[in-house]
Length: 115
Length: 108
Image 1 (tube, rainbow over the protein chains, first blue to last red):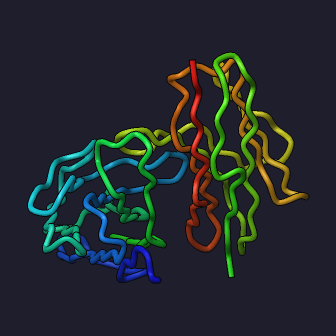
Image 2 (image 1 turned 60 degrees about the vertical axis):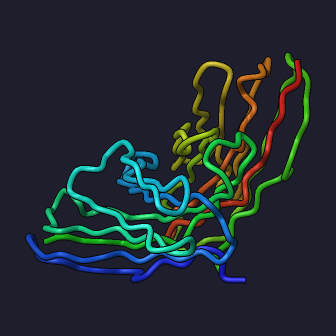
C-alpha cells in the first residue's frame, strides 16, 4: 500500500522555468492538498481539492496552479519559478474535507530549489 | 528507515483533564521536530523544537524535546472541547516524516 506518492523528491530550477509536481494517492480519498514548508515555519496550504472536480486556494496560492486530474491525482504547477518558491512541498490526502475526525496522510515531500 | 511513531493513536478525555501525547522518532540527521493540530482544514502549526530540554509553551499547550530519548511530548492542561483534533508530529531529518497522529476527543 503506497499511500501518498510524490514525484520528484528533489528538483533544482532556474528562475523563470516551469515544472509540475505530481501527487497520487491510492486510498480512494476525496480530498487532496498541497502545502509548502519553509525553515522555521509550519505547513502552509497552497491549494486544496475538497473533492474530484473542485480546487480552491489556500493561504499562499500566488505563483501556483493545480489540477485535480482524477480522484487519485493532484498536481501542482509552477509556471515561472521564483527563488521565493524554494521550499519543501508536501502533498496530502484525506477522506473528507469537512469531517473533523478525518486523518490526513502525507507524501514524503519534494525539495525544490530555485536559483 | 526513518520513522516517526505517535502514541496513543486515539484518546478520549473529559473537559478539564490533562493529556500527554507522545512522539518518538528515528531519523537521519535530525534537524527539528514539529507539532501540528489538525481540525477541519490544514494542520495548524503549534511548536517547532530543535534543542533538547527546552520547553515551548503556548497557553495550555506545552512541548519538550528529549534528543537523548529521541522523543517529544505534547501536554495539554485543562482540556476543552475545542482541543478535539488530530495532533500530528513531524520530524525533519534528511526529509520530513509525519507520524500517524493522535486523535484526541474531549467530551463535555
